[in-house]
Image 1 (tube, rainbow, N blue to C red):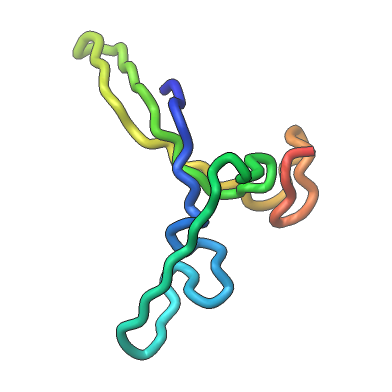
Image 2 (image 1 turned 180 degrees about the vertical axis):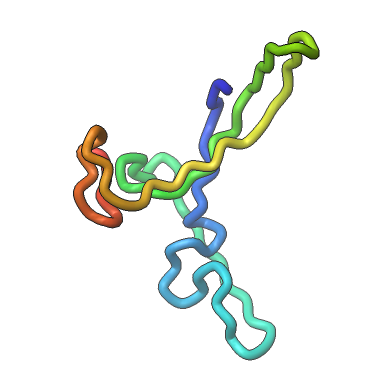
Length: 90
């Protein structure tokens, strides 16, 4: 898989303090967020979906297509330098 660009999951409710993904509000409600993409700090974005070109080689031959690689960093990972639950890359 070769990433082409990112889809930031924050813009669809993840991480929102009032309208987070899956929050129940007792009936129909709506809101929206606007983010200037050139101001998004990739180093402080924990949850993205990377839109990718994909290539598969195997017993069925070679196939090419497109796909989504979801990425969410949670928890300690010593090789990456993550020490706490929501650490960012050092």
